[in-house]
Image (cartoon, rainbow, N blue to C red; front, side, top):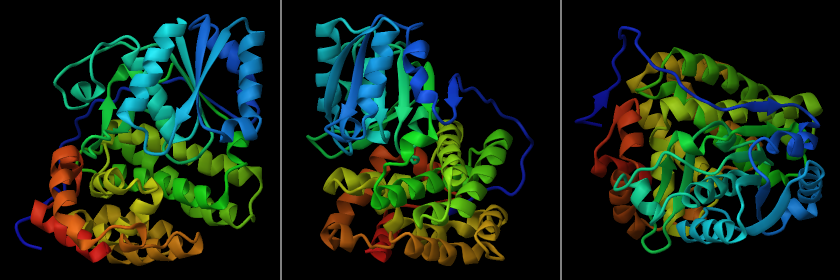
Length: 388
């Protein structure tokens, strides 16, 4: 591809690293929810999806723990995948109506992201989209306790909340330190009820976070070290966990990798795979991990020349030898977890590409700029076509 910007090969080392999150990690730690939450409030809004936290018994376990610690509770259970700005507004209004002063989320990335936005909107007036696009700013939110039930988004480790505007399909994140959790309770046992299809999708999302943070143009030494460690954990354990060939040790490792993935993107950001996926799932309500699976190999093929050393590092963890091997190794991984797919499989048509490429430049400008090779809108449209 012509007219591209490649990543500089060497720079003086200068960076800032700040991430004020308290991660409580380990099997059985969810039982401490009440003890950990009581410091931050007296009435908790518990945010969940429509059914899974109840079916698994985790909602009852957390609710009982909160009540035993002396907290009152209210339930908001209307969050769906690719959470909407309108749902966040509804949850915030409910939190204010009920006088909740702390928010406890139980679920995957969608639930945690929506809970973050609820906590933010409960103390900041106006439309959340104005804060997402920088028209307004806020530096406060209700205290958050996050309890992830999927090892994928890493939302428990950062100050991002990805929301979709149902009016125009814009999918973009609210970002501020106020929505970093006061406590994230990361209990590998909470992950073990996931269906295989969900595990594959969220596990690949976690891998993408780490690969994108590692190869980002704004990566720095701490994120590099964490990312590479987490990629190794996923490379060595995801397929075995998916295939039921791993015990609790394997679950612990991919859960840890997922949380690290959330942490590193807080500082190093994501790159083009996330940047291009958000318009696709904003348009067609695609499962995020599937959208990444359809796009990532083609994006790697177009991008690896921007930083061959780092792409080679990743390829070697998956059994390759050099940077150009990585796309093939990722395709092999996707096949082994039954996640290989195209954008066409997910309902995207060629006529959708111009809007998606334009929307990518609008909602994902930072991700485009972070990519090892910085592409134009027309080049991004070409990559979408290759992923159909």
